[in-house]
Image (cartoon, rainbow, N blue to C red; front, side):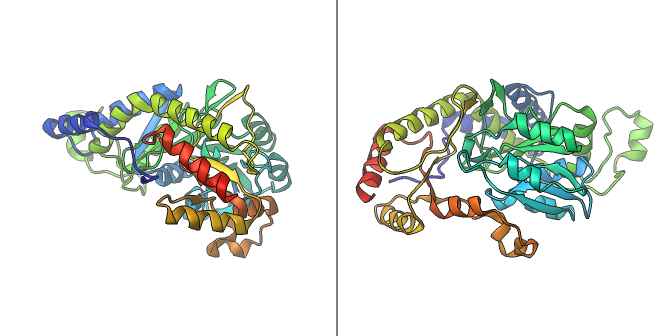
Length: 370
């Protein structure tokens, strides 16, 4: 029927790429700087750092905040592995937190139980476009002196109490992978209101190379290739940024379409036996990266996914809890709610390139199978 990861690209993106190529600026340059500025403005935050993907954005955030080997970082287990692996890049130890049984985002009660004197930061993930309880998470972080890094990879445009997610933390980050609300193919962005943190991340994203823009001609000749510390090649290209600038102009249209389709799913599947995620409609704008539901048991989930695949529609299972991934089993974490939710959860397709008739067909098939 359709590719559930298919991005919404048209002539405007082609024109943006042509402008970039004709300008001769295809590496990191003016298009990246403009994209950083425009995306920060969209998120109502001061500073931004565009990078090659969301994973590198999180890695830079952890480094900028001083996370080092042996530190502990509180992370949700019900998320994609890329929310966890940068913690390991830093030599730090992930402390896995269970999910809330209603929202499926980080459970604040379990978060409180798992804080130790070694914990330095917490990474709440706005799962599938739903917003975490940032008031309570922020309060816990303040009490225990924890840095907060919001993972907004699946939450472009999500609002919590009328503010953009990504603005409740020391640093936040977004992904622009092809299946996100808006895309640059690959790409990511770190955001903060702290000028020192953004300067640190920008230093690290490009080999730790010192800025040369403000140097005199003589100093420039001497210091053009001085790296003050070990850095990385995490730069975004102007080609990616050109696509991003075009996508950013459309992102609210994309989001509103996803919300409208989610409302239709709710109407068509209400009473069918599936469980929807809870969110406070007065305080949260859920932007639906996919349409997540729980079925009655794991066997039902498997049968439904197999039958849909036969009909040409690939459904996504929920993420496998990260504490059960082979590399992380050694920590012997207990997150029973996340295990149960993961076993029963599927994501129904909900992308802006779909039509209303697709939603109705998928809902009809699901009701019949159930």
